Structure formats: structure tokens, C-alpha cells
Image 1 (cartoon, rainbow, N blue to C red):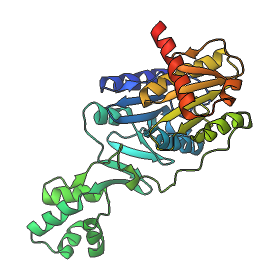
Image 2: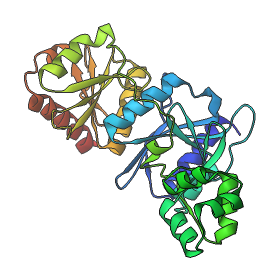
Image 3: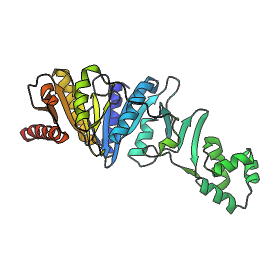
Image 4: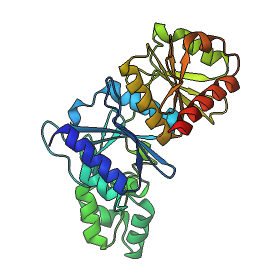
Length: 322
């Protein structure tokens, strides 16, 4: 399957699941392919045939963007170099959850979350420690008795009841012994930190020198500015109360810049984020909802409300003429 067809299939699946999906970020560099929203669930999705192509730099960018935009970064892919991704299993690459299309469909369309996650050493499941302890006590089994049944140490059983996860093989043995479900789902959208790789979100990249005057204005009027280096926008800015985000682009107003501005607007609609593109000389007021502001005009802005009004007015101009 071509990557373009895979992106189309995943997009259609998300739409079938009730997500509003952004335009594809078909421009390089790009850390994610689409943004998607269903209610309060927001995803930034990278779609790959071979997930080995997902590198640490891209993973770091997706995790940062997820933090700033209130979204879950996610990779949906088919295989690694060595094998197909298994259905019902959550993988992790560079701190980002990775699902096969079948696992994603089960999660988003059928509402069935994965029960298994891959980690160094094999496949594991979350044991519901309280259910396990209750099941053992209902049988009037000691920790030693259960340990003998499983072929593990008493200390290991004690750890399971304290919340330690178990291998798939042990979980299967427990299922057979007690004839009841003892596992809990992998919370891909919330709580995946419990099983993901132990990596802190990396610091922001350095500001591109060409963007420093724009960043200086945004900072001066009260925004916390986060540079990017693989997104279709140059920065994500948050106001002081973290109640409003803004995407910013900056370059000459070329055809490529207009394409970026359209993508920014589409991503902004999904993430409920305003967008502005700063250019040296403007020949139009906006591009599909992304406000176009000249550099000289940007430098003269003194307050956040002034910039906010400009963005809203120019977005509304285009919206009213559609």
C-alpha cells in the first residue's frame, strides 16, 4: 500500500469514528500528517508504512506540540523493518504511542482499547492489582500458592498485587487460573505515561534568527512563545493564562507560504487555535482564515488584544466573502 493510500485510509477511519480531521500537512518538514478532534479528544497523527522512519527528533517535536495544543501525539503505522505491527498492541517510539490501523480502528470506531503494550523484553499487560488480590483471596490461596501455580517467586506475585505489570504469558496463566479478566486497558489517550518510555519532553529548539523580531513582539505583548522546527508553522504561542494558543508563520508570501497558511488554518480549526502569517509585503488580508500581517505592522503592535483583533477581523473578512 502506498503511503498516500494509507493516509487516506486512516483519515477516512478517523472521520468514520466521528473525528473532524484537518487537511493533510503535505509540505516539508512535517512532524505530523493530520490533526483530528472528537469532542475534547485531540490527536496529532503521523502515518507511516514503516515506523522505523519515525526518528527521535520528530518524536520530540510531536510531544512538545501535544503539550502546547492539548493533543495526544500518535503514530499509526503498518510495520517495522522486521515485522508487521500486531493488532491489539500499543507500541512506543521516542515516547509516542504507535498503533496499527486495525488497533486504531478498534480503539476509535469500536471503542475497544488495546490491552497489550510492547516494551523491552516483550509484550506486557496492565494487571488490575485489586482484582487479582480479591481473586486470590476468594480462592483462599496464599501468595506462595499462586507463585507455585505461575512458576514465579512469591515476591513477584506480591509485586503484581502492588501494581507491577505482567508479561502476556503470565496474564494468560492468570486468566486460566481464575477464569475472569484481570487486565486493564492501555490508556492511549490518557495515562500512557505509565507505560511509555521514560523520557522527559525535550526543550524547545532555538529560534530561527530570521524569526527573532517576530518572537520579540509576541513576547513583549505577553505571549509565551515556543519555536518549532518540523511543523507547518514557526511557533506556537500561549497567553499568560494558557487559555489561548496561536500558530505563527513567517516568510515571503509565496505559493508555498500560502499553502502553509492554508494548512495552519485547517490545523487551527481542529485544535481551536488562531493563526497568523507574517510577511514582508502583503497582497491579501488572509488565507482561508489565517491572517496575513506585514512585518512593519507586526513590529508596531503594543498589546495582545491589538494582535488578537487584527487576526479576528482578517479571518472574518475571508469568512464573510466565502
